[in-house]
Image (cartoon, rainbow, N blue to C red; front, side, top):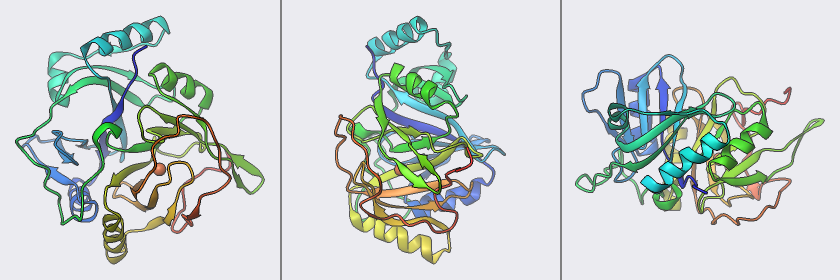
Length: 297
Ligand code: FE
């Protein structure tokens, strides 16, 4: 069975490209790359050509997730297993692959309609060392864990679990949060040594994406980012704390599109076995807006 190996890239629709450029470089530390294309720009986190494509678009939301498979064989095998499962996909043209800076890709959608791309062969620019948009103590932790993790909207959690399992991920419920009279049981799916790459099951937020987590290899970069966020009066939605599932020390803040970035350090490797938690280790107290969990759904 072919398996996706990482969240390799994502495309974001952003209303205010200039605000995103400032936010991504001066606050988050990513590298901004403008190749003269009228409708888009790129954000780098490592040697890859890009990890995020910023598209000028009024949605202020996720436009697509790019999941990697190891190579051409796995790419073929993945198409066979999607076909056998009756999942529709479209093989992208050479031009479309070039647009994403990958060798080959297919385009499909997950059960909630989130556009998903499965690719192999990203363009890696060893000629262009990562140059952070502002000083960093360390670097973004990508490598075999991919660019990070994301929580996305899935109104049918069981269907989403089946879909991401078909892509070769594994996972399940990792928390049981009591919120008023309800219990929220989010599902976390992993495909590498990150505890989770995709998670869902927190109700039906207005957007496709709840947050993107990026991880750094030096705790001081979490501290520095936290100082910058507070200094620039960017709303902190969840204060610093440590998660029980991935052991990430992190905090959450709003990006210019209104959804959240999580900035983290110190995660443990995935256990690859199921377990669940009733609360975090410490901290992660809600501030402006909190986690955006829709307790009515
Ligand atoms: Fe997270």
